[in-house]
Amino acid sequence: MTSRLAIYQSSGGLYARRNVFGVDVANLGLYRALIAHGGLEQLTVLSTQQAGAQEIADVLTQGATSPPVVVSDIMNQRAAADAGALLRGRPDLHDLAWLRRRAVGDRAYSLLGLVHTIAPPTMRQMIAMSAVGPVQPWDAIICTSPSVQQALSSMLDEYGDYLGDRFGGRRGPRPDLPLLPLGVDQQAIAAGARGPGVRQALRAELGLADDDVLVLWVGRLSFFEKAFPQPMFRAAQEAAEATGARVCLALAGWFPHGETDEARYRQAAAAYAPLVDLKVLDGGDRERVMGLYGAADIFLSLVDNIQETFGLTPVEAMAAGLPVVASDWDGYRYTIRDGVEGFLIPTLGGVAGGLGHAMALRHAMGLDTYQTYVGEIAQHTAVHVGRAAAALSELIRSPALRARMGAAGRERVRTSFDWPVVVGRFKALLAHLADLRSQAPVQTGPALNPVKGDPFADFAGFATQTLKLDTILRVRPGVTADDLERARGVELDQMFGVWRGDHDECLAVLGFIAARNGAAVRTILGEFPVARRRAVELSLLWMGKLGLLDWLA
Image 1 (cartoon, rainbow, N blue to C red):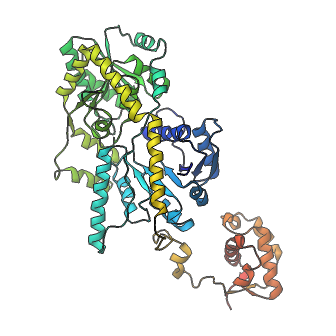
Image 2 (tube, rainbow, N blue to C red):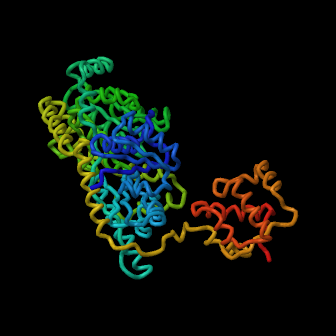
Image 3 (cartoon, rainbow, N blue to C red):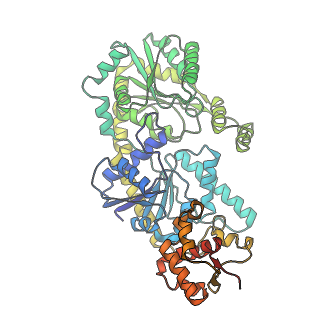
């Protein structure tokens, strides 16, 4: 297997900032883990421009010099081919596959995308485009949970059947859909959570006695994209009533709509959990969040949103040794074993064939935002409050059970979700895809995307005629080198000059044509190195535009 890898990050999204989204944390964690544990001889970072790639590389490596990092822009497809695989932190591979085909060919390397959510219809459309673009079986869309893997497989099957029904024929090739979880740095989390005095200091700050119970939520405080908090409030209240314990519920995160959302949460907490001491804490401070894992007794996350596909925070909590009470939902069902590392609380989804399609249609037609779409689905998805309260009560009553489940959680992370383990599975995936690529037949089909092809070809019929190799060009009467010099000082003349030849090349063209009283394009281009001919070709059109050259007989 190749010991090189390329990463494509179009722009931003990796930078250390407050109030980060889970996708940013997950991508940055994966990339840094591949650097730390992947045994790479070289990492290539590609972006929309080379300067951006260098900035991203600096964030990834944190000053480390090994492995060596090469930076370039995404148009440098030879760099991706040399690496053998190109990874991006989203599942949209369609345009990259066309770029690969045109520049270096389908078999040059493998494309890997990563699913963080499949809830947005636009995201599902992006993934579905892999069925019509030149995405290959040696490419992969990585699924982080079995639920996502099954949902995507079904979606691509149904979309393939639709294409077959509409156009005839059979399903075409599609990318691999491997199951590969996200990971965490267990050692770092444990160090942050179990550091000397961390638990005592934070509990004292929160006003908690030794026998008080701190229940912790970590994550974005978004009722429309994460979880409606009412089931958590009610379960905490009922557990406090059942056990007689003083229960503190700490919400460590940030509100997308600031004080407006916080007021909504506090109103719901006052209504449903009057006995519970509610703490709203800053979740943008990672060091403080790690400390809260150490200060807490139980981790609670009753997610109800289709936006969620994996869920890093319960895994972080397990790495810190906390028992987890979580909704039986998508990725949580994959990472947490009911009765072992914690409790999975039953959930109830809506009826297929009801009003769900109307909700989706309103979003598709632009009548409702994505946040409204997923929020209204979540509002009508139930999490069993009674089971959640019973689970919290059982853990509150039994410190021994909390310790046993916490230890099981640490072991679960060590064997399944610690970064060295996840990176090992990633390397095995790369080897599998490389083997598929090596056995693939020679590429067939068009090299350009018919929808996003060459504009000079796609719109050739717009012009009277097009420039051809046998087109005769002449210098218009009265035109001299002074006209080119004048153009250097006209801002409009210099627009988009990056694509054409430079001033000296234009001067050479003008002199060459004038000396011969006209010359064919083929002859003119033959005077320049092969690597410069396409740029000079555009210079001919530009000089015709400025009235320097005549192309009519």
